[in-house]
Each structure stands twice: as structure tokens, then as C-alpha cells.
Length: 364
Image 1 (cartoon, helix red, strand yellow):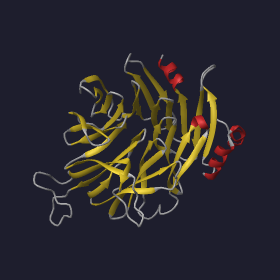
Image 2 (cartoon, one colour; image 1 turned 90 degrees about the vertical axis):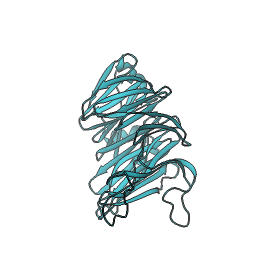
Image 3 (cartoon, rainbow, N blue to C red; image 1 turned 135 degrees about the horizontal axis):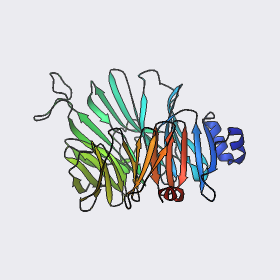
């Protein structure tokens, strides 16, 4: 059941109502019980579609697109009935047509990727916290014709947030990013994996007061793209497969698998390959589970033995222990995140939070 803003206003805390009002009436909040005796499911309705979702604990970061501005980044805390706006791109949205695709959340810190420009594509990693909502730039890449430097999407969990800054080469006369021997046009020839928090300068640290938020984790003369973060560890795609690293850059294990996506949970790593989802033990490297999937399926999350995938308007929960599968149908393209407190699902302008005991009840 969804309430109108006038009804929701009466049951919301004053803090939440004014936060929503500050968003230009962007948000409507309602609370509904899924079944008699069940914990209350909470719903957030936005005035524009949610195109990316990240969650950590009881919080979810939303990337909201709408006509009239490029994007808004908000953090929703359903159990506290609180919404905080971190960023609103209400300027510069015509020149260069900047766009936004990814958002990450680690505790109270969010980060997101902005891309845009004319002949030169600029990719920028921005970050802000609930306590300090004014965004700062921490990495920037510039590429022409698909070659040059690129800031890659941030990924977060707990207190750790990671991203990669890399460079692609071009093997033609006069290239500013020439390919070394043995490499071909389009290859990543240099990559540095960064993390926050840190006490050093970030890759982008211009101005009289540079941002000291970052630390270098690892470097490679090839690909080193962050795929997943959990428990102080980072899973990164490399030229040879997937590397599992500590926050200090120590390699814990190398997995010989070509990954499109990955999710970490405790001692297990889930990997989305070209035609399957595979689950590995992070200690031994042993393949413990595998099942075929459709080409359009996305690996959304993995928590406490429950895999979360999405395909179009359908979210699927799969418990590895007993093989139980449950699906959730939505009205629009769906995104989902599973945390210990519960399940976040975003579809179009509607975001729901279902407490974990209700999620487990669905799985039986």
C-alpha cells in the first residue's frame, strides 16, 4: 500500500519530512505490512527512475535520474525513516551531456561515477559522506577515441571503498598512448587500484587543499578492475582472471575465471561468467556451486549464502544451502541489494525494503 505525501507527512518524523521537502518533493515514504504478524515493509517513491542502487547495512544509496537535471544521489535509511541528499547535478547538464551510471556505499560514505565531455571523455569518481555531504572529486580520467585514462566505477562495503584508475593504449602513428611491444589497441596497459579511507593524496588532488582520503592498494601493467568489496578484501578482474586482495594489496588468491561481475560474502566468491554463475571458496579456490543463467541476467549481490540476481523486471533469491529459489516481480527494470537487515529492491520510481525475517520466510 502506498500513501500520498499528505498522509505520509503525518506519520513521518519532522526530520524526514523536511529532508523530503528539501528534495523538491522528490520522495514519498510509506510503510506497509507484508502479512499479518510480519515486520513492516517500507517503500520509498521517487519522482524519477532509480537507475542504480547500492546498500550497506541499513542504508541504501540511490542514483536517481530525471528530466531537468542529470542525477541526484540520495541515501535512504528506512528503519530510521531518513533520507539525505548528497548530490544534485542541476548545472552543466547540457554541455558535454554528462551522465551517471554507478553508485557505491561504504558505511556513511557514498561514491559515484560521472562521465561526460565533448571530443574528450572525462570520467570522474566523486564522494561524499552523511556528515560532510559536499562532494569532492577523488579521481579523473581523460580519453579521446576510446584511448587514454579512465576512472572506473567505485565499489564499497563496511568501511572500505575502492576504485581503479587505468589507461588504454592505441597502436597508431602519433598516439599519445602508444602500445608497448606485445600489446594491441584497446588493451589496458597500466592500472592502479585505490581505496578509501587512506591518509595519502587521491589521484585527483588539485587545488591548494588537496584531498587526503586515499591509499594505493595495487598496481598492474594490465587490467585491475574492482568487482566486489567485502570484509576488508577486494576482488578485482585481471588479465589472468580474478585476484582477491587485502586492503593493503596482498594477494590472497588468484581465480582462473573470466568474470563479468562478482560478489563477495565471507569465505565465498560468486562470479558471473559468460553463461553461468559460479561460486568459489576463497580459501581453497575450490568451485563449490555452479548453475547456468541467461545472457541478460545480472549478479546483484551475495549475502549469508543467498545469491541475488536480476533479469529485466524479475529479482531472484537463491539460497545455496538447500537450493530454494524465490522470485520477485516488479513493474520496471529491477535492481536489488541484500544486507543483514534486509532486502532493498529498486524498480522505476519505487524502492522497497523488506526486513530479513520476511526474506527468510519467503525462502521457507
